[in-house]
Image: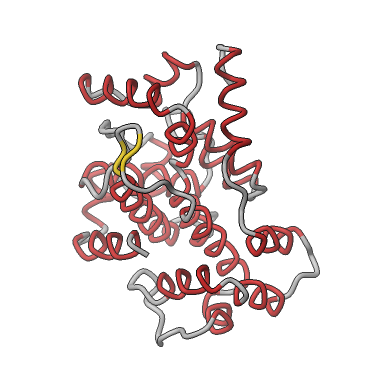
Length: 282
C-alpha cells in the first residue's frame, strides 16, 4: 500500500479501527453474498433498524429517484427500486452514518457529505448514458468514493491537515501530495476499507481508480470520476481537494464530450445542490 512501512502499519491499523457496521447492516451484507436470499428477508432486516429505515425512505422519496408515488415502506421501495438497488442504498446510507461531526483535520464534514451525496446523484444520472454501469452501484460508489479521507481524518488528523494545507496553498491535487508524503493516497485506503466491509469488487475497483489518464475502462469508473470532477468544478460541497481534472479521453468518449460538455448536458444543477444539502442533513 505504501513505501513507508511504519505508516503502512498505522494506516492498516486505522482501517481495522473503523467502526463496525450495525448487526442489521452486517446481515444485509450476508444476504448480498447468499444466492438464495429473498426480498422479504431484506425488508425484514431493514425494518428492524428504524434509523436506517427513516434515512432510506427520505432518500427514496427525494427528487433524485423521481418515483411516481410516495414510498412509505421498505417493502414498497423494493418493489420500485428492486432488490439490489435497495440493498446497495442501505449499505451506502449505513456507511455515511459513520462520518464524524463538526470539523476534523480541516474538514467540514457537512460540506464533505454534500459533495459525496451530489457526486452520488450525478454518477447515478450519468449511468444512464453507458451500457455497463448500474445506476444504484454508481450512486453508492459516489457516496463512498472519498471515504479513505474519513479513515485518515479519524486516526491521523494532524498529518492529513498538514497535507490539505499544502494542497490549498499550491492548488495541487490531494492524491499526488499524499503519495509524495505518505506513499499512498485516500483512494487506496478507501478501497481497502470497502473491501474489508465486503462491498462488491467492482465498487472497490472504482474507488481505487480515481486518478490519472490510464484508468480501467469501466462504466462505473467513468461515471464516478466524471461526477466527482463536475461537483468540484461547480463547487457543490467540498471534500478538501480543490484541484479539478479534465476527463481522460476514454471517459470523455463514453460520456459524450469534455467536462464542460458533460456539465452543460446536465442542465440546471441548482436543484441538485439543494437536494444534496437536504439529504446530507438526514
